[in-house]
Length: 505
Picture 1: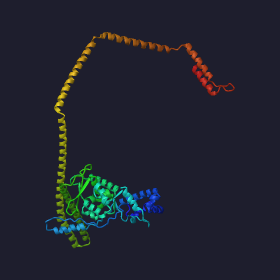
Picture 2: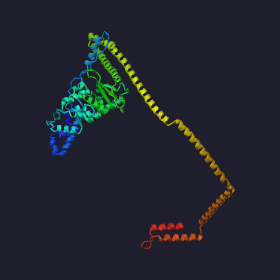
Picture 3: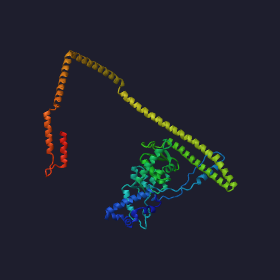
Picture 4: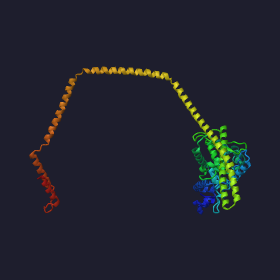
């Protein structure tokens, strides 16, 4: 995978050739008039190049600034609260700094030609290519895409040339966090966003077990959990890409989002209960369950950090023992014992308690689903019973009994008629019928005997006729003998004639 735009461009054969690069980096607006076929080929080339470079995250101008760590506080009334907060602050600050990931679903239009410069050449017609891609719907401005539904997005096109208005529309849709992203010159690749949203939905419903808790996510969890389907590599999804994917899911009625705190800094993302269903609005039950789940995730991260801290202190103590630093070893062991027995133990107990609450919520959600199933079954049964009542079951069975009785009466009449017919046939003399059958059998036997006698007579051989037949065969045999010019029979024909004569004799 290329790590820079220059490395990416160096792998393209058309750009390594000086003549082809000169054509592709020329003024393509003029080529549209002078060479329409060449312009279409250049348009296809640049479209594929820009989409591929965007998919590799090489056209994003997102600043790679350190990402602030999550600021967590621990509520405790113990006398060691101050030391506990100090330990947690150290565990959170020891991690390496994370940088904002580059976008793989959109690219910056500003300065695009300068970034695509290769071997001293700068593409002068790339802005026209981008305009053509926008007119054909391949890309769309990010402020329009994030504005909302299709109708609102269409209406936003009338004000997209006013940067302040476009930015304010995005802020209204996403809250205060949207101001961190520059939307004026970003272009969203529709096909990449739709494919990423489909992969995210597949990954979510493959892992979601409980509709109440697993379908509620924060923005941070969404970015970490679904980076793999979008980036196809390990990492964290950029904030801009996360919003684009979520907007696509909202348009498809697969997810919804809302601001849940007064500072407009925390976003609640809710997925539909099932892939085939539409997402429902966020309820108070969803907000409460999300708060519980978020707290559980926060405490779980703290427990993980504390466990890492314990291992780190143990390693430091062992190294101090190896270096004969007794005082440092005792300090590390004392701090390790404090973390294990006080801080980590309480955090683990709190995690166990909140896990029980989550299980209770999941059980309640399962009970609600069961009751909904019973309610649906009751409604279905009620409808079927109403249909049965409308059919007047008693009248149906009374009619059935009447018709069955009528059928029995008809069958009795048929049986009586058959008996009368049988009685009428009893006047025929059975002895006369037997005599007629015997006569027919005797005539058939006489015919068979006559045919057998005739066959025997045809097989008798008459002596005179047999000798005549033998003489005719002998004459035919001599006639088939081929003579040579000196009237001497040829050897093969003579031998054949002798064999036939021997057979006759």
